[in-house]
Image (tube, rainbow, N blue to C red; front, side):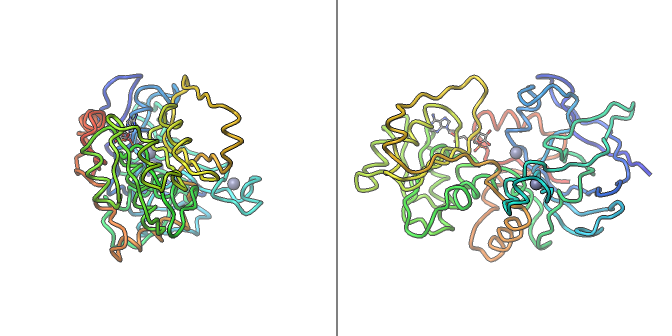
Length: 361
Ligand code: APR
Ligand code: ZN
Ligand code: ZN
């Protein structure tokens, strides 16, 4: 029987979000219904609300979540009722050209639930990133559920479902940071700080955090940055070069998503170094660089979607490392809030007051 639960809806472009009753169908073949225990507030939820992703309102927001599988549909073997899972937006298909070449972390045909959740009047909802987890229960594809150690706090685990995974993955998967490397991270919000954590985990010898806000630099330091640069008052390219013997960092991670910070990343890296763009630009942004510098400086210019993560490989591993005390994911949870507080959390996010607000149920 379909169930009625409370969920956070973005009704129309720039309209305030609100809690409404939503209808969650029973899981069909290949689907699962998950009782959500925690869901972080991510920038992408705000972008959906602002109409920056697409116009398929109303949206059911929330996509950084963990919970317990309540029921599964026919043919589901990978998870069972009672399993503690993190929801992912990269449910790999196994059949696309990336999957067939053994690169499922790039899967180009990820899947979501086939059925739609609705409002009580039957209006179909568009779940954010195919998840929609600011809701007591949500319907997803079974492949979107990744089992992890149930001993971890749900508010912490859920963060791996998006922003924290994007940052850690930008360092360890996309940037391939190795022992002894020098790394610079430009933009130290939740994603940039996660890149700092990833760089430290990978054994980076020097981790230079760059931001325009001293509060952010303090936090980055507590996460493992060895040096900090306030780029409002100091030229970050010069500063990073000075801190790396005059050469630049082996890997520079751009976690803002703007042309000027990308240029800084490009020039702050050593010859043959790597730039990783994990910040998300907006459609009107353009980048201009001397092509001779692109050629002459060598190395790699990479973009990192979702930290190039493979959920089944990376989520359980990172939860285990957290449980062992080798990374501190709890430090990303600035506050826990209720389902009715998402609009206020967007304001706090906008003001730069939080790394993550997490809705707990
Ligand atoms: N130079 C350096 N740092 C900057 C600059 C700049 N010009 N402009 C902004 N910042 C810093 C902010 O001070 C903040 O600390 O970048 C950080 C951005 O952090 P958040 O707003 O918390 O964003 P976050 O969740 O980390 O996401 C970063 O990745 O997923 C994408 O859409 C997201 O593009 C965004 C990026
Ligand atoms: Zn695929
Ligand atoms: Zn997100």
